[in-house]
Amino acid sequence: MPAAKKATLTLTLMLSLGVACAQRGGLLPGASQEDATFTQYSPLSRSEEIARRTLTPLTFRRGQEVLSGKGQALREQAIDLTKETFAVYVPAGGPPKNGYGLLVFVSPGAGAPRPKRWRAPLDRHHLIFVSAANSGNEVPILDRRLPLAVLAYENVRIRYPLDPARVYVGGLSGGSRVAEIAALAYPDVFRAVLLSAGSDPIGGEQGIYLPSADLFRMFQTTRLVYITGEYDETNQLDDQASQASMREWCVFDVEILVAARLGHEALDATGLDRALDALDNRSPPDPGELARCNARIQRELAAKLSDAEAAIARGDRDGARARLKAIDAHYGGLAAPAIFDLDAKLLARE
Image (cartoon, rainbow, N blue to C red; front, side, top):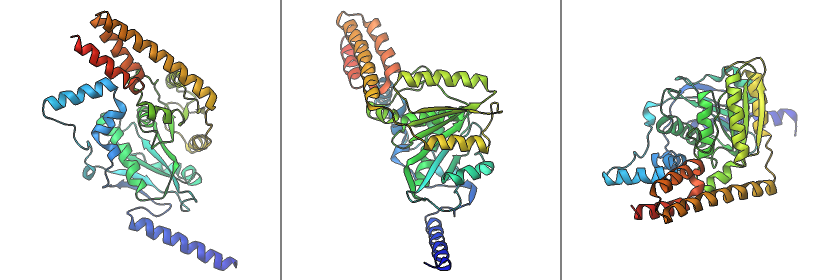
């Protein structure tokens, strides 16, 4: 094909793509908007669904029972999208063959970050960037920050062609900790997580409870990239505790980076570029190692459940209640449905 004709065809395709994105309410490639508004809700952002994915089994069930007893229910959606704005950047050059990647970013501050200095790495990685305003550390996680992240994903998804394998969530500092919660609760959405200058252990120690077994098995194949400033010693220590927790819970696809010459601050373009390279460079766990590790968790859980059942059988209600509470917090959704059966047995004896 002559070069001039090929260039004309390429331009026509890009213009067609731009028109299609505009018709669907999206931005043209290379464009950004700091106050974008969205309209689409998702079943994944329903209050009950968020609670189901983030609370422990017994906490979730008892909360439902309390509301039901009062003739009440959780709000369908915690977020009123007519009152929300988002920062969006669409990388230059149009989507690759499999669609754009997506980075849903959670800020520690009230304003949505303006990714001007991140445009080059976002362009190189063909990643759309989206971040909600008024989603900082001062507002609730489950009622605001988490549903906003899910809704950001949903509204980008319906406007642009996305590669599901490259839908990522990330954040800075407190926002990074929310991103970790989002990745754990929604591994069916977010296939990798960028933890920048903030992370926590999982398994209940810091309130990050494990989801249901099916979701947790997905999380065990999620890519985790930690990157913290060279001089941010406090959060480097927090990262080490989080990383040890991941190993304990058989989460092995982890990469650890250090942002040179940075303290507790946002990544520069070079640091983000390295982090995005790491997000894309997945290292799936060895199936045999993962199976052996999960078998160890199941043995430990079975022993804890058996110990609680023995306490119920001998009439040690306080001891049984304490054991169930500890299992519920530590194992979260992995303990269901067995923990429901034991809780029913305990209630029957009271």
